[in-house]
Length: 277
Image (tube, rainbow, N blue to C red; front, side):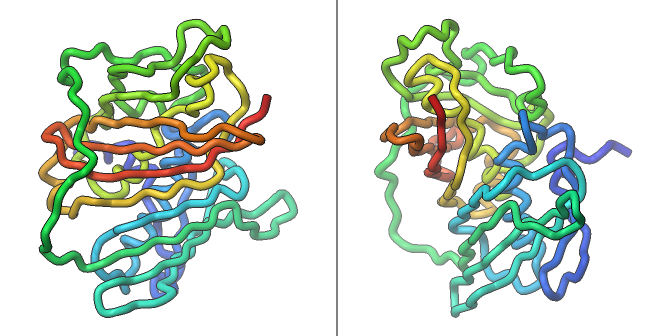
């Protein structure tokens, strides 16, 4: 019997008190970043607690995750609760908690989500996928910073805006276009889409061609596809585009879009990131 996919291993939650939305999980080394878990994995876990809740209505429409403090290695608790349920929409609050060195339970991540029962309506896409070479025509990114395990879990093929080859302060734009998918084949779902919305490195590095300390403070992802549409994407590549917008006073925001190979806009995201000189 094959072992579960690394993403599913990291996403695994066991019930502490299912009726009240309490879950227990543990950090996974495969999705470790420099000082804690990959932020996209944390976002996926917050959403997974909602998706596992017995009172869930519909499918994800929006997810906001606020990184209040670093998640440390080891066990954590997630609490997901429906704040209000309407006829076709449901509003959620989530917290990820861990015990500190003194044994006190502390909140390190807060989140909200909106789920909904979608209905067929008129639709149009005013954000078409850029024209880019096919994934197979783009060289795979293979060299990343040491100690950043989560990069190995994704197949990334930068079309443009790859990490600067020379860190000399000569950057002049902040746009990246990249093909991405799980390195080990896995059918796309809402949790993995939430994680992939955060695969882009800090835009300030590209804009300045200078490595500075930076980290996401808050990210919001909007889901434009249904679960059935994500299943149709299967294990295919997604085209991601990310760009910064304003860099000032220690913070910048960056926006991102993710399309299927067929050109369907699956998700958009916005995040606010702190940085230092």
